[in-house]
Amino acid sequence: MQMFANPQTLRNEILNLAASCGLDSPCYAKMLDYTIRLFETQGLGKEYYGYHNISHELEVTYVTLIVLKWKSILTNIKEDDFKYLYAAALFHDFDPQKSVDKPHEENVIRFLTQDQNLAQLLKDADLDINIIMALILRTTYPWRGELKEHAEEQIAKCFENSNITRGDEKMQAYYMRLGWLLSVIDRVGGYSLGDFTKAMDMAKKNAHALAWPPSFIVKRSVGYFEDLLNTEAEMCETVLHALPKDMRKNFMDTVTGFLNLRQQEIKIQSEYLYENLRLVPKIEPMRSRQDKDFQALLFEIFNELPTPLQINRENFVKTIEDPVTILNTLRVGGTDGQIIGFAKGGPLENYALRPEIIDGNYGKHNTVFLEPIALKMGYWGLRGGSEMRHLFTMQAHSMNYKYLTSFALRDVIQKRIEGKEKAEFVTKFDPERWDYYRIEL
Image (cartoon, rainbow, N blue to C red; front, top):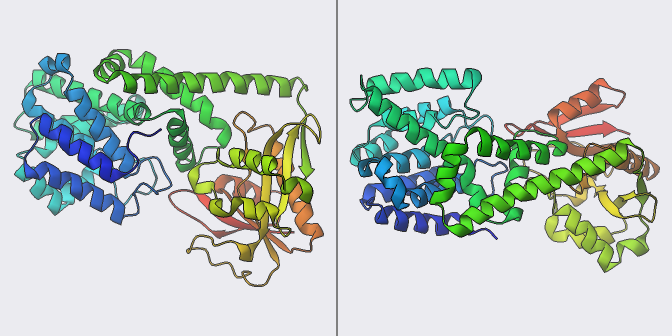
């Protein structure tokens, strides 16, 4: 379970911790409230589709303060620099006008230097913005190749512009290490504040925001944690030892959980490649759809979708039982085998889609809407989703629908346009690149 269910709870905890770290001046509370207000007014509150929302920003700030309270690390960090780590953590993804979910550090720096309200808050706290920018630039990920070289060039300019670090290699190395500390906290923090369910939700949001196919989620998550624990072992161990036992356990349980899922994926893929695994789509009769156990099983699979893709969640059972709903499942081995996925949809008029969508067919009762395909983790990438989508299309055609609409990744839609399908974009969404499209049946 997530330790902090909403930003307000987390805000109060941050203020309590900040005060215990000597950051009890009103300016620090004002910084915090300004950040929360700006994120929420820009649509980047906790309901935002991506990973880098206000919850992430606050979680990193909270965990930074937790680490600062660990006594044995304080000999390596000057107490006067607590305020720099606090501000850098709070503003590290401060990119309200983002063009993609993952904040671009240059956009963050631009916003920090141009926002007049923020400039006054930093002045009130007697903070050198150059040090804050240097710390934020050090959170660039991954810290290698061109990204690293470009960030280092910008950091060098920040150090040159600051009276604290100009010409002082020792102080520059000190702040680079603080930036490294913040970088690792940034990547550990959220995963230490909840159970594996929260961790998986974070990973799915990140994948959705980066337009990854679902089959990449577990594989790339494992790579992410292995890089953290191996390539950055020294600082990662420092951060983990600074966390309370329960938070440390949360993080390691998450790592173990993803490793176990990856092993299951490899086993499933191996069986599929050796043709020991048959995936069979099935049109489900109404008697199955009215069975409570069947509904519960489908809802469990539905819950594995990223939150932004859980369309009409509150009416899930009602739509399963509705005779106008088209529903087919994917089963293992045969038509009576284990259910591992499903495709569901119905008349376009039954859905309240995003207000930006203007579909000229709405109200003509000639279009079926296909909800995002739902599959259990481990079975993505084995063409089961395509099999269900094709069966759904055949069902819709037999019911005399002229068009099918749905959401998909922009690259996937483009391939369908270039292929044999009569597909077209209806509404494109940025920065998600998860677009609404139409197919003529």
